[in-house]
Amino acid sequence: MKNAKCRQCRSAGEKLFLKGDRCFSVKCSIIKRNYGPGLHGQARKRMPSEYGVRLKEKQKMRRIYNISEKQFRKYFRKANQKQENTGSALVQILETRLDNVIFRSGLAKSRSQARQMTTHSFFKINNRKIDIPSFSVKPGDLIEIKQNKKNTVLIQDLKENLKSAKPASWLNFDKKQLNIKILNLPIPEQIDHKVNLQLVVEYYSK
Image (tube, rainbow, N blue to C red; front, side):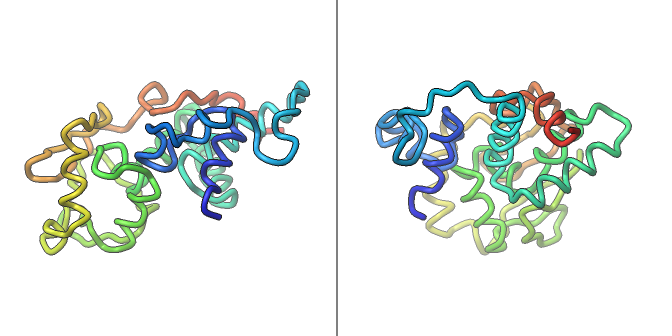
């Protein structure tokens, strides 16, 4: 569906920035129709249950990172097995996905675009071609645009976007060489959306 991503933002009740430039324009659905999707969206005023609150927060986080429920649940299980705080571990798993890193560097306008660029073999990591969006990067990794992709129309267009891009603090993005170095693992305070991680953990723990 053409406006599926817009419906997801309206369902969450806030901007999830899923559609790049459109999210910053007057065309944003949250600006035009700041109520839930569907025929009775404007009439939905019921107080959500505790389960509903947890579900909404989990759905919001899953949609932000543009991944399926099956994959998100798999990530949660992996995070829950780690010794550190489950919420923090989940953030690290999600944030260090290759498609997310490309987006957080400012090189792509949305996570969806970053995913498409990855599957189209735009990048190499430590001199090795990687075309898997879910590939997990680690501190010290160097992500580069492949030489035969640097002069594509897409990259030339995105260079304009880089002038105002603000990379995540755990990344070093060389805008001239167009490479990204992973400085350290991210912490919850460094993600680009406010997410109540405790509610997400509680949702899967019940």
